[in-house]
Image 1 (cartoon, rainbow, N blue to C red):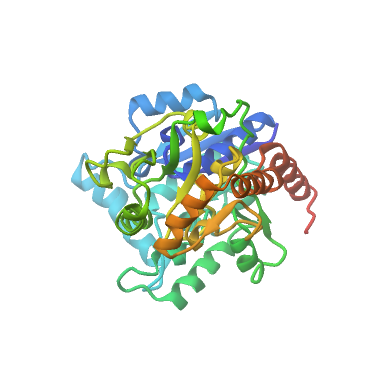
Image 2: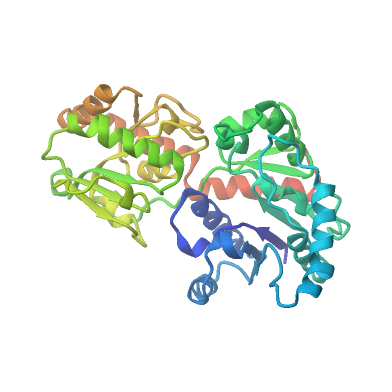
Length: 397
């Protein structure tokens, strides 16, 4: 049985973001293919409680769960100083993270816990999520021949570019340097695949989102509860984009439209809109996607594939979005998305879909074809089978 050591900082049991959907899809793949997976996460990033740990373990997505701390508990000041603080300061100096770059979240204590895992078990694959933690594998003597894989999730430099003190040239150079630590570089979108393959032509694998096609019958259009469905977290990109939509687009829409918003974005949305239903958390989105006519994805900034766009496509829903909403999609035109950054055109696209059945059906058909050809679970499973088989046989492609 092949063994995988998989690091992902968030708690997959939360099921409240696109990055978590990504991690869940990989965990499900390894479980379905019979791999042994030891899963490592971060205590404070992952919002772990005894209940959430139990929820993850009961899902049987991994053989073991290890929640690491950034630093040890400070029980004795002398022990903390000599047993941790000195080593931590020396390790920080060794990292030499360039000024103006993306954060480096690898700590000495985290690295020691990670090394202990490697010393206990010999792994075939070691997968690290995000370049923030790339130094977990750098010059690591305990890898014992394991294939190291970075699951990039995104171009992190683009996510930090508006922060004070950020230096684009420094950050991109440092991010590429961190990717160089790994044997394989996994990307989630064609955009990052193109970029990273310019620097690592023989190491980049496109591993798209893998979503199972819905196994429920979609109700007729006239029976669906919602005209518009908006699913989002409360990250900075969504906060700005939601504000734009409800300030610039919403006033131009028919007030009889029924809108449903789901996710941690909900507390940040306007109060007292009579046609807006708010749901802070939905453990299963199937009922909501199947009861909607159109999905909206206002997205003025951010990079990478928008998981909620792909999920909407799986339910044959046309999508109305900004230009950033189609980032990472292999087909930029025949994908079921009506794309515009203009608020008037955004509102008009919604009205056209609701009033022109022929156009709606065309967009619906293109959305599902884009999903089926690029993101459907069975097809991506086969692609990942081939990627791992080539790694096992030392092939470059």
